[in-house]
Image 1 (spheres, rainbow, N blue to C red):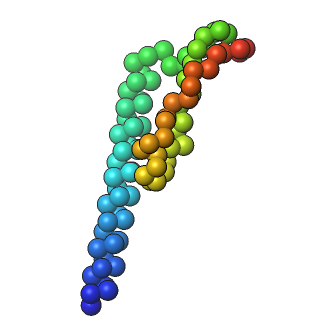
Image 2: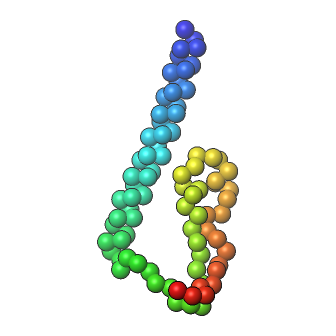
Image 3: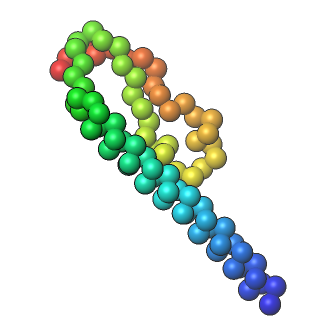
Length: 81
């Protein structure tokens, strides 16, 4: 009986974590949609400009190490289009 309750609690915890991630992804999509409507959309960089690359692969993982990893790259210079 205790094992059944512990399995139920574990499943509830996993379902809650899954719902939290799904909610965050829905909020991100809604925010991105709002931002894309309010700005020009595509950004064109000229050679010589400095840019940073966002590591979005860290968004899709639940590993706690992602909290400590940098999400933006070091500045990079655009060389050509």
